[in-house]
Length: 242
Image (cartoon, rainbow, N blue to C red):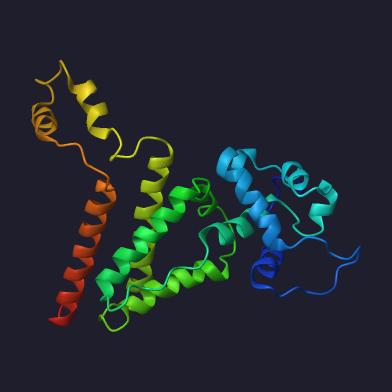
């Protein structure tokens, strides 16, 4: 198995993330911490992406050999899992006095900000891995916010998946410079110009579109519509609907 690109050792990944080592490992006394290794990886990935995240480069940034680094982290997949846990961090506490909708609105915006600060995290969350304590803490906040709303446990988890997807996908577009709030209308206008007869509705819409200000328009709009749908389901459930 290639250390750089081979299969994932989920048991070892679980040990690294959850702090349950299977037993002592031979070799010199440890001189690094998993946190220091993860932060070094995050610094590299923030500038070079996951493609630029090479074990040799991480080792050099920590002033150790690559083989020494492997004593702590067996491969890139395990390293990325640690990095994701460090980069996303613990979720902030919910706003004081907020209802379930206010909590989930804040939660999604906070998550969007984490993904936007670490563009590589988008890809890292869709590869095989073991979730860490911080990731479960983010999930815990969604489930806790929806407790008592009448939604089933499965529906509560589905809400979390839906909100994660919204935050993650918009952050990915932002990182790529194609976010709707940064040039979407201008790009469409260029394409439609001279072809208005083929796209009359779109041309009319673009003529009346006002460029958004500082706010993340796509995040605001999509999040509001998602929460509207959840609110409708909760209301229907309270009225005796299925």
